[in-house]
Image 1 (tube, rainbow, N blue to C red):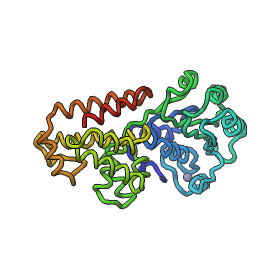
Image 2: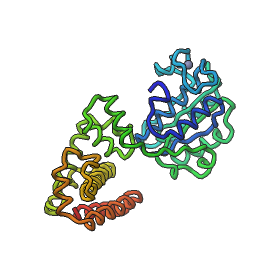
Image 3: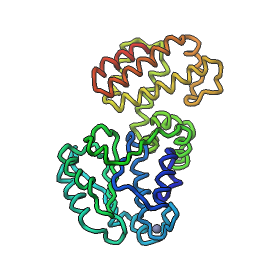
Image 4: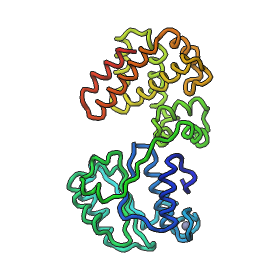
Length: 327
Ligand SMILES: [Zn+2]
């Protein structure tokens, strides 16, 4: 990504950040919040690059030619620091060594020093407490950007000090066009990946030509095509064999939702409006004819119950089985 117009979705956030850049008035502590793959890191990178650009003037676009931009593009802008971590958690040492200590050193060549903390929800409590003082009294040049999929993981003291941007799912069509342009893949493949990504272009981008995606898609479709026909035992066995964790289950749920939406469109008498599984129109029609609205309504309800339980980690396995039994 080289500039703002290459980013898709979340236009309101981008517009806001662009005006922050143009007016040169960034907050010292910022949080980008949203699911993995939605574009938080990409936006943070462009934001940092733009702020550091030496030739930007009152524009929000990085020039791409100045020393800072060239350093940034080669991954060597010394005043943009990405805090990394090796273990499962971001420890107090990670924060002390890579952020707090570095923050005390003035920027090398730019007016600002920008720290990007990816997966900031992994900061343990000590790390957050250590960060707090720097968040409260940052030097004039200091900017900290926390990227997180879970604001709840932050102490209230951290939450109350950051300017938070909530990233929203990106439209399926937008992701689809992006995939076709970037990966040169067929429309149908791009559409399925976009639909299964839940509005996260980064996920769809990684998935679309991966072996993992092909496998997940294959087994999901195998079940979807047989809704209403397969014996319960077979469905449960197939799904459990393939959906081993939360992310796998969520993938299956999105495929299922998209499938049901298409069946219902056919059932409503508008087969031309099928948006996802256009190559399976015969099977969609067959299910639309043989299964009633109540049947699909119950499945959609079961999906909601399962999602809720996955969110709180309670009895998800039982709810997953319950959902599968209804198919
Ligand atoms: Zn520049």
